[in-house]
Image (cartoon, rainbow, N blue to C red; front, side):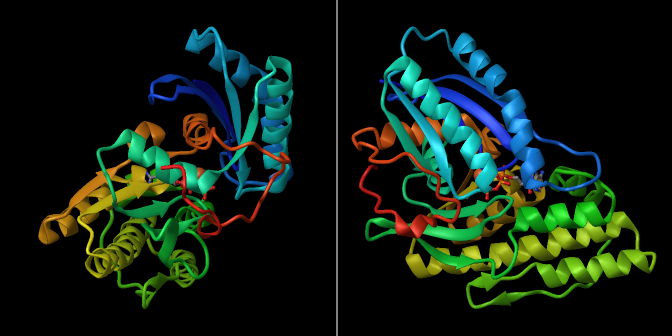
Amino acid sequence: MICLGIESTAHTFGAGIVSKKGKIFSDVRDMYLTQEGGMIPNEVAEHHKEVKEEVIRKVIEQSKVKKIDLIAYSRGPGIGPCLHVGLNKAKELAEDLGVPLIGVNHAISHLTSGLLYTKAKNPVMLYLSGANTQIIALEGGKYRIFGETEDIGLGNALDKLARGLGLGFPGGPKIEQLAKKGKWIELPYSVKGMDVTFSGIITRVLDLYKKGEKKENICYSVQETCFSMITEVTERALAHLNKKEVLLIGGVAANKRLTRMIEKMCEGRKAKSYAVPLKYAGDNGVQIAWQGLLESGRVEKKADVRPYERIDEITVDFL
Ligand code: ATP
Ligand code: FE2
């Protein structure tokens, strides 16, 4: 069985073609980028509308597959107008090809595709994307959230900082580069139980920036502080759940400093740490195709979008 998956929850319109055995035939993406500003929902949706035909054409052409048996799309969580672009294109394709259509949860697809790309079996999952910062593990048939951000996601916090520093979007990679030349400044450290907050830290450093603090020092110190907070709660989750693996997922997992911190913590606990390969860390259609294949036994009653669907609402009976 071969599935074409469509991703359109946020900045990326992507498509991927994957087989039930986990063979990835093709992966095509087009990401909305800006030099200075952030993401404006309707502009991003416009971007997706402009690129969708080309992305789908390329993904089919590059795959060289003869037959597609299933279409999957990201139903949420995500930006409403962007989700609709993906849903409409998926509906159209399923109709044209005369194959079933299935909507999947974008966040779950990050987790399950993480298991496809790595050797992790039953890890504590650290899901760090734009909007999400969650420490997750599979317990009692559901992905349960053991810790999370109480305000904004780590990726969005980095993007907000980058915007304030005039670095453009996405901010994470630019901050990572500048951080290499920075020195330590003391910042608020915000962990409450298993939860974290980032807004206060960003507000503080943007204020320091106005007062003349160097961008490099800000980037370095924000990374050190926020990544330490994340590492601390991850270590506690490992101990509490008695697990021996950590899996880093989401765009922020591309950050080398963060992966190194988590690795060191794991070494100390004799646990293994895995990260989704750089190439698949950001949103893509492959993860959606894979989740579609996992859920391919299910018949979609009504294809819709679910901008706010949380992972702990979903029964995991497909692994
Ligand atoms: P979600 O999965 O919650 O819908 P998303 O689609 O925005 O969010 P991803 O594509 O997984 O998330 O990740 C994008 C985020 O990753 C952006 O906020 C970006 O700044 C961040 N990011 C990318 N590369 C790096 C890096 N090297 N260091 C830190 N952050 C990074
Ligand atoms: Fe994502």
